[in-house]
Length: 368
Image (cartoon, rainbow, N blue to C red; front, top):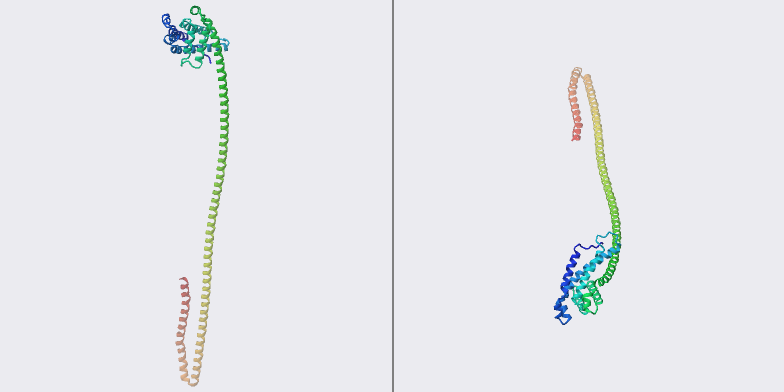
């Protein structure tokens, strides 16, 4: 990541340093009127306000060191969008103002300057690396100041101190940047590995889910296929049962029809047989009646012949006895025979009609 220095950073830094100087540098009159250094620090230097301003200055120094460290990392290949040489120069200028304010604020007194910086660095807003840098600056200033306050006020070499402090600050900042880079790369590697593991786990899970889904789909397919086979078998069984039932009903119907036909045929045969027997009986009866008629006729003829013979005998006897009477009687006998013949004939006809009515009555009773 390329660190950039805002265009207004130098102006902003100078404004902060000017405020730092105004806060940190007491008047010679005020300093001369105070017998103790703690009174000087507490009433004129305002450590808490100076600490807040110094915190912002240290942020600017860190940004300048980071820019320069990046320039060193890229070997000034011209790809940076900032002037790499501007960082140490800006740092040296602001550092010189801060150091000068500390020296002049302490009136060149090394002990006072050290106590003042300890008080500033002990403020609650200066924590962590801000406090470390504040203490390092305090030690550097204390080490560079001599015991001669006059020499410190007029001959103190702020540039030399700031150059050495810049080197130390840059070294530490470069190490910090490298450490952050290592940590960032390690974090990125860890994140990449975690992402890889998460991706592999996700892929594995997706594969397992796909396998499970495929297994379930296969089970559902097999279950569906088995269900369809069962339903098909049940359907075919139902169709077969329905066909068998229909065939059985049809066979039963045909059997019933055949039985009815057989029964009707049997009944017809029985009726025909009975009719035939009745006809036979009627025929036999008629034949008997005819025979009776014939016998009656024969008997009638025999009676007639017998009567005729009898009449003839009587007539012959009478002729023999009495000629006249015999003749008269002989003449009268044929008249009697003639009179008796119609009566016999009429009786025979009546008998015949009576016998003819009997077959007709049988036929009428059979028809009923």
